[in-house]
Length: 491
Image (cartoon, rainbow, N blue to C red; front, side, top):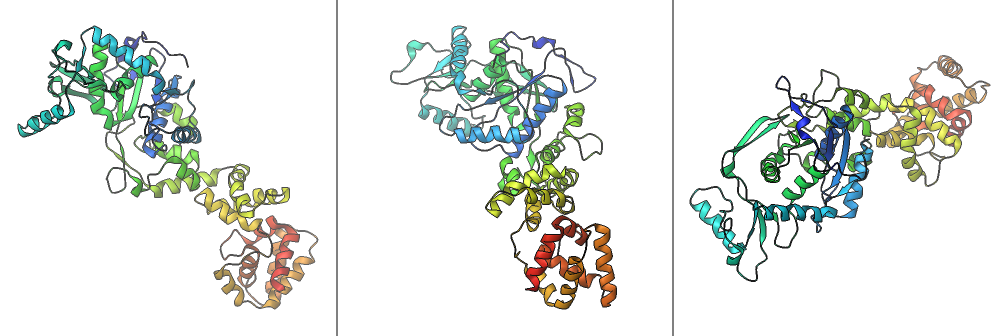
């Protein structure tokens, strides 16, 4: 992609004290910057969503940067999983994704500039000396941080055989103030922060440096991220100040917690988004759920992507952690399933049906699934459930009958089923009205209730006691398949 350049006019962003929003007089550019050390987790997916919505709301740009400087932990599989997760969520980024590792040369150039200007220095403190500094500070009840031992020393004092780190000569007076669009005004005294490392002894840039340089060079105007980064932001402000760069507008959103109020983890069901996809959740329901997880707008629960883009702002983001509730997500997913187009749903469940069947579906089977899905989606909560419940429509004969259905059939006389088979066989029309009249007339003739015919018929045709309405099943299966399944039972 083409970088916006370091000379972008951040000063065109004027803060309006009447609202927590920023008056936009330039192109809004947000970014999502995950580390490829694992899959795209729920918290990261929500961060990506909020950045994407904010950019799209302002007709701006949403950029993707892979922070892969940790070469030992970064993997190509994780990068691909992040791409897949973002795409599955329905989020598109502008331009090419950027590899942070590919920009190491740019990071180092900035540090060379700071060294030349006397705003950074080489530190030759050994690990043992750093440990001693920490122990002394702890014993004296002082904050544990680097004491600036090499801050004003000359390179001529450098010991031999030690590769120095390069530290920022940070301001030690006054305070750093952040006007955060979610947290409000937050400040910290500069003497509470030490001279952070910019370049490690092995020559690699640190996260703090790389993030600042990349955000600046990519023209990022708004940084929207978790509030666990708030401490980092104070330190990154120091780098911006040393370089004379204007800062982006920051918004630190509260983290997502589990239902018990503890930090979200796998034990709460917080898996990568690919796990939810595999479990049968729709991307639109996941997007809707994450949107409402920490952001509010009236009482609407169902918010389409188009509505979200139109409505999203940072004023609606709360300051308290939100709680991940898998039951609410599942309920919302069920609603989206009920509202989804049958052809679309048939396409979503087809891979599972093909796997279970061991072959591709025939045209007749595909048509049967599409026709029958409306009667199934009312009960399903996930795509997986929907696929399982739809399988009986294409199951090879003789179909398997579960234990509960077998008990139902044990209580039914074969004569009634045989009589029903003969009545259905004689029909010249196979419509809802004709089928209903035929079964009701037979029940009346035999002096039995409707359920005495419908329950065994359901068990024989679906292999279960729970299914769509019996007339729906008869219409979807059609005459030949229905009579074939009755024949299998009677034999």
